[in-house]
Image 1 (tube, rainbow, N blue to C red):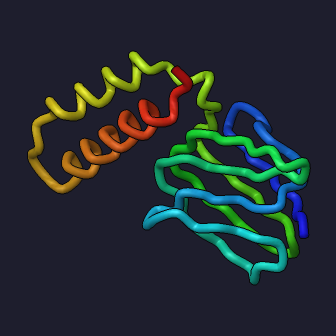
Image 2 (image 1 turned 180 degrees about the horizontal axis):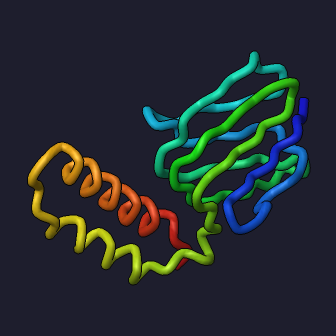
Length: 130
């Protein structure tokens, strides 16, 4: 059974269609969403968002943090970034990973920033269309 899904970034509405399933990166791991799910509000992390369309195809985006809400068979995803794999700059992702690896860790905040940058770079490199 399909449900409505919309993906919004600060710049634009990236996606608006009916889907049969969504798999999104919550801050603590991947979560699958199907129609009829009880209401949900979840903090998003860094990773791939997969949306399975009603025609059997799927769309994938790299997303970076935000929130997702499922209510009454409407999934709304608000994220800072939603990039299709074909639009990922592999060299920029590699450079981000290298900068993160070289970062000096001085406190909890710098450790968190380093880990986030490493995750962003690794996920983007893995998702990029070659």
